[in-house]
Each structure stands twice: as structure tokens, then as C-alpha cells.
Length: 429
Image 1 (cartoon, rainbow, N blue to C red):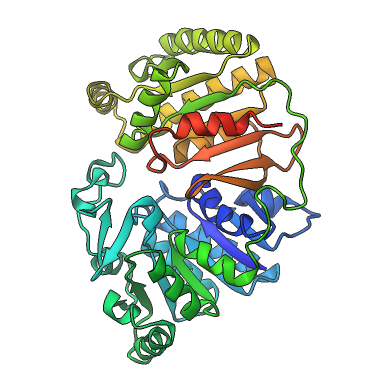
Image 2: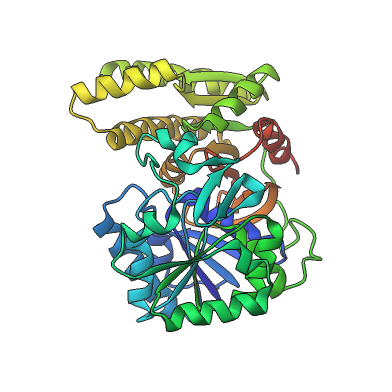
């Protein structure tokens, strides 16, 4: 069994689909629900979400350390630590926790995800051709990325020695790469970051590291590793599971992400006729205003769904409103993380109320924090990965009743038309 620890739910699904689409049974669990299960049938790939990206480094370390120990006790012999594809979060603490729990001294790190525009050349990370520090992630409200050198970013978060294997050595093939990895180990490096130019880079890397016990980084490498595990001949969605009866085909969408990709997807979906209701973030600070505003959204969204129409509920995402919300939050003593949690909590409460009122079973949720909050409010304890809609963006089925058909979308992934494609995907029977 392969054991994977991810720091958020969308990232857990992102790496899960890389194995599921190769015909490998893959389940995703919030760490608490998996830990509390007394009887369980383990899949071939088990992904645990620690929901630790917004935690302090100390809390993140503790979560990953404990879950790594539990995975080892469950029989896992190969481990992966799935992080954000641009190194947001508690990267050093979580990598260190996995190595410490396994009493290991070495980990391979691959962050590149070419299909989603992430590449690494000479240790510098790029997002759609822009250096990380010049990309949209520079303005991330919680984890602003102000540097592009991955070695420097990771070295600032760990006392372990961090090295790099550049693209010219990777281009020479898997055997040369294996020799270089061995040399780095002998030189005392404990983490080695590998450059990624394109999918061919990942193929070479996968062949070289497929037997390494600890791998860290984005999900892209897992796609190539999965092909080495099993034949990719299995058709999407045919992992021994059939879609259950899911009632009305209308889809409830909710978006809390502030990433420009999600904003563009919302604009495109509205132009295609998707009904959209805005959760006004400025109204969430006052309890009475919040109650009245959210109740109206629940009423309007429920009516549309009961009429068989798709509906999107999205948090305020215009730059002016986002800035005003931050200012008001600061005046009331909220930091940016607390404002983010306030919004995602309110949006997930609205989604829960709509689901309770309508019995809705088909949902598209955009944004890592929003997805985690919705899963928590709906008591979703585990997911079976179903089909890939776009790179790193799968659908999934809940493992408990009543079953729900979900898409949990990373805020920065997907093309402009993703919402429309995902809605059509979720309408299948």
C-alpha cells in the first residue's frame, strides 16, 4: 500500500486521481475520520488530509508525524508528502515530520506540474512562464510567495541540508539521475529538489525514483509513477464502482477561492447562463446582517435547485471588495487567515443548509479551505476518487450514505471553462 499525506482536501484529491485513473483503487480521508475507524478495508493507495496548510508549523509537524506513524503501522512501505504545487504552507515542518516519524534521512522533492503550468529550472519555480515571485501567488492573502528559488524557500524552513539536481542532468536519463541522487546522499544532502521542464522530465524522474521510500511535492510525478505501478488501460470510472442513484441532476456550486483562475471560471460560467448568487463578505462580520443575508441565499439557491436549475454561490471576489473586507477585518482584530476562515465557514454553512433543505447530492466546490469546510459540515468521512475532468481535477464519490457526487477544485487549477465542464460531468447517471 502506498500512503500519502496531503495538507488540504483538494490536494488530496489531486494526487488521488493520478492513481485512480490508472485503475488503482484510491481512497481519500480526513485524518480524524480514518483514525477513528475501527473496521476498514484499505485501498491500494490511501490518502490522508491533515488540513494543515493554515496551521502553525508546530501543529502541522505534529499532525504529519502522527499520521505517518499510523500509516506505517497500517502496513504502508512507500510514502508521499503532497504539498501545494507552489510551496505554500508548512513545507519544511511537514517534510521533517515525515522523515522523523520514519527515522529516515533522505527525501526526493519534485514540485513541477507542467500540465498545470508549474515548471522548475535551475531551482527557480515558474507558474505559466512567470517566476513564482512574479505570479498571482505573490498576492496570496495567507501565504504570499515572494521568492522563486525552491532550495532557498525550503532551506529557510528546515535545518536539514537541501540540494538540487538541475535539468541538464535529468535530461541525461534515469540511470544518470539515479547515480546523481546516490551522490547527493553520499554528500550529506537530506532533501534533493529535482528540476522539471515537461512531462518527459517527469517520466525520467519516475523511472529513477520509483523505489525511493519517501517522495515529496506536487501530484504530477504520481501520474507517471502510477503508470509504472499498473497498466493505464482501465477506463475512467471503472474501479469496481458504479454511480449510485443521485436524484435530480441539477448541480450546486460553491466558490470561496480568490485565485484569478477561479474568478475567471466564475465569469465564464455566468456568461454561459449559470445562475450566480454572491455571498457578500462585508456582511459577515455583523451576526444579524450575516443571518439575514445567508438565509436569503439559502432560500434563493434552494428554489433554483428544486426547479432543476444549476446554481453557483460564490464569496465576494472583486479586488475592491476583497480589500475592503481585509480592512474591516483588521479594524475588528481579524488577521487575513481569520478573515479567510470566516468566509469559508459562512459559505459552507450556506451549502449545508441548502443540502439539508433540498437533499442535493451533486456538488462542485472551488477552493481548498472551502472544500474542507463543506466536507466537515456535511460529515463527509471518506472519498473514492472517480474520474479526471481536467489535469489534477477529479470527481469523487463519498464512501458513506447518503452518497454524494462531488468535485472539490483547487482554486488555482483549471481552464476558464472548467465550471461548465464539471457541471456537465456531474450530471451523468
